[in-house]
Structures are given as structure tokens and as C-alpha cells.
Length: 397
Image 1 (cartoon, one colour):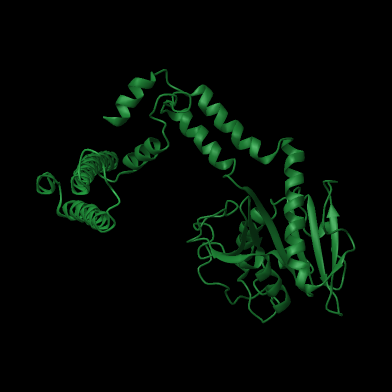
Image 2: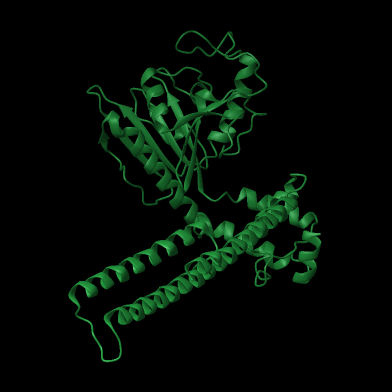
């Protein structure tokens, strides 16, 4: 019986385990028989002790055979389930490869259209329920005009352009101030702490409407966080494209080290610089002059809030706040005295807060609402009447 069971086993390992189990049972039966013979304890009316032991041994063998059969049936079931499990995962792997091939087909050619189509597919906008979020826009001049207006309304972050003007001790007129090309060490250190220096030729962030065509190789301080972008228009670092040699040695307009513009260049430099700097709503002025700054020195209808910084002999700095817009300005206030370690950060924060308040006062809406209104206008007035099914067929073909 043991040999017959071994022939029906599915593996060598299960055969060895069943054989070991049978040998164990037979061993126990043999031990029990020996003990019975020695003690002569098992007697019955119908037979001798040897007959009784034969019957016990036969029962034990039947029980062992049942155990082996159950074990083999269980092994067969486990093997069958294992094969089903492997087939299932093989099918899933094949399905995943097919999906990957489908995604690859969406980006075939690696064009901008293919990449956009892949992004829409991964976002689930091609599935049922996406008809409210995916629609076609009419491609015409009006759409291009609205998109251009959307770009001018600002990106996803709040944007500010702040003028930074340097006044040396010998400056007495606005022409002297705006066309200056030199900086003191103290002013240069202050500007370096306002933000990190960027070159407009390679800068991808906010520029405050400055272009490399107007000011080639212009390097300005730039500051940004997750929700704010700030560009600082420093007058001494804006060189118009028309002036090829900077600065030129001329006959008038002396500067601190004797260098100067030529007289015929002064008007052009002043015009190009002041056209951007003078239009900023917030001005930061570094004054090393002995006299108190007056707004009449740099007349402009902008400059709603002006922060004037005066270096003091004890190493501290006094701040004058000129508030033409009559808005709340903080954290700096008129008459504040601060140290060099906190000066740049306090000036930057105050200028950003002032620019935000002035903008909301003029347009009477928060910054983010302007861009949201542009998107709402485009989606509500420039959509094409097309079914969701036809849109999917056109995009995925």
C-alpha cells in the first residue's frame, strides 16, 4: 500500500515525507506489538494476543494510508492554486505592458501635442466624467488677445517690481541721480542682500517688463518665494542697448571716480532708466546726501510709497517713509532705526506689503482674483460646441 501511494505522489519531496510518516506509524505499531507480547496483557475470548496485534497493525496501516492520501490531495490542490496564481500575475504583467505600450503610443513623436495628450490621459480627463473639465476653445484672434492679457495679469505668484535708487553726497539734480553709474560699498552690500543676482538674458522669472533688447546683459537682484516674485530695478545697473560702451568717458556729468557719460548720451540714459524706474509704485532710495530727501527731487506721478534709507555714523540706519497713497505700511515706519543685519529683509518686506496694498486699492480686487477672472472669461465665452465623444476621438486618433 505504501508503494502504491508513492507512485501517485506529485513530487519527490512529498514521497519522502509520506514514506517517513508510514515508517513512523509502522515503527510505533511494531513497538506496541512487542510490548503486548512481553506483557501478555491483551487477551480476548475469541483470539490470541497475536491475532489482536495483527488487527491493530492493520488498522494503523489503513489510517496511515488515509493520511497520505489526504496529504497528496492537499498538495495537488496547492499546486493547482499556485499555477492559477502565477497565471493571474502573468496576465497582469502582460496587461501592464500593453498599457505602457498605449502610453508610449500617446507620446509617439515626442511632440508638444503628444506630451500634452499624455498628460491629459494620465490626469483622467479622457475618462467619463471629464466632460465638465475638458472642452475646446475657438482658435482665433480674440483667443490670442485674451491669452496675452492672461500673461500680463501675472503668473501663479504675486509679482512686484520695486525701484532702487542711489543718491550720492554730491548729487543735486535728478539727472545726476538717474544717470549715475557708480555705487558705494555700503549700497552695493545692501543691494546684494535684497535678493540673488540674475542676468536678464538667462532669467526665466519675473522681470518687471524689462527685456534684454532694451538692457542687454543687465544684472539685477531678484527675490522669490512659493507665492511672491520681486524684481528690483536698480538705476545704477540699467544700461540701455543704444549705449555700446559703458560708461563712456565724456566731457560732462562727473561721477565719483571721474568716469562719465558723453553729453549726447545723458538724455537717452535718463529717458530709458526713468521710464521703468519712475513707473514703479514703490521706491527704495539709498541717500548718502547731507540734506533730507524731498519728493520734488525725483518728480513722478507714481512712487506711491517711498522708503528712504539714511546711513548713520554709528553704523545704524534711519528710515523715512513718504506715503503719498495714504495706505498702511509695515513693518517699517517713519523714523525707524535698524541695524545692517535686518535692514535689507525689513525693507524688502515693507516694500512688498506696500505694493500689495497699493495694488488692491487701485483695482479693488485681490491679486489672485485677476487671473481667475481671466480664465473664467476665456472658458465661458470662447468655447466650441462639440461633444465629449468627438473631442476624445479627435485627440486620441
